[in-house]
Image 1 (cartoon, rainbow, N blue to C red):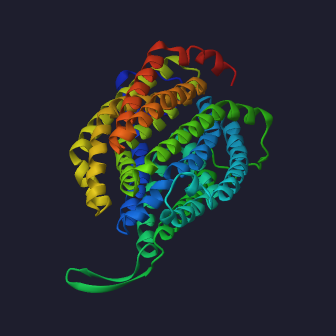
Image 2: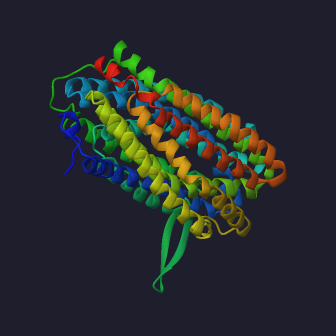
Length: 473
């Protein structure tokens, strides 16, 4: 059976072995992504039972939270990709050094981001155009997540490094655990004490009745517990990376590791910041359309995530495969794994898009009892379903490019696509077509983005210097 050590050891891999290895790494990564999105789905459906205003409060802050979560996640990738390169080159001690330095650097960055977010929290809902009735809950929800950002960043770092080491199972299982814990915590924190009936037996269930605040606290508690377990496994049990029981090393970042991290992370971080800035602009475009549109947009975004998260899982596997092939100085494998992963991602997300088109009404029914929100959410989901294959191409190709440290041009491509296509088209269509126009703009932009990423992949420009760059490791 194909194994990632075959890349490191210079063994020949036929097409069957490559497909097997890509599938082997992709499946746990897909499960991890799906469980993470399922957690957001459950959060949204639980909050949806509280009414349109509570749903809109959460939806209003989603793009801003993605901004802060995303920039911290992108910063961790600068170190995780270096781990893949070092392990591919069979330099385990250097990989462990990157782990130590990554912990220090990412914690410091996350603390800074957390302080900045907390300073913005009181006024942010107002700046986003939220109605007065939404602002208090929206600010509170945002503040809870931002306060926990340093701990959440350790979850991103631990999971990223384990995946880049080829360990997809542990992050996947821990993400499933996080989903279960989130359900339990939310069940008791969101709703007040109440009676429920199970098989005709009436039970009195205690509850804190915290509403939107309870949803934030419950999710953060689940993520913090999993972050602790993720880091414990990385530092104490992961064979190539554990530092427990080994000679002590410095956690102080060195210039060389920081330089490489900056080269990888800065384009990704800027690209994500620009992308989330665009998402915030979309929120500003949607906000004047009313509470129903805000809530339907937020629920539809969460529901659509179930469709595209398999693409991100395959993208994670592509990063590992191209990254380790890069470190092992095997440029032919880099290209091959990129093509295989992109094809796999497009096939999976084409199927998921068809399922989403058919199941859109059921997905929205689960998330909210408000009929107007359900109908509008169903319509926009069916618009988006047509763009899923091309969205997959951009997601997975991006993951493959990141594995070899090629992040600058993909960042420019994402920036141009979303700001020069999605935002202008959404602003043009929203006044006449409402939320439907915003989602038509999104589908057009995602199709365009997929095409330009496929063009770059086929051109080969992203991997022309792989052999030279790998020799400099």
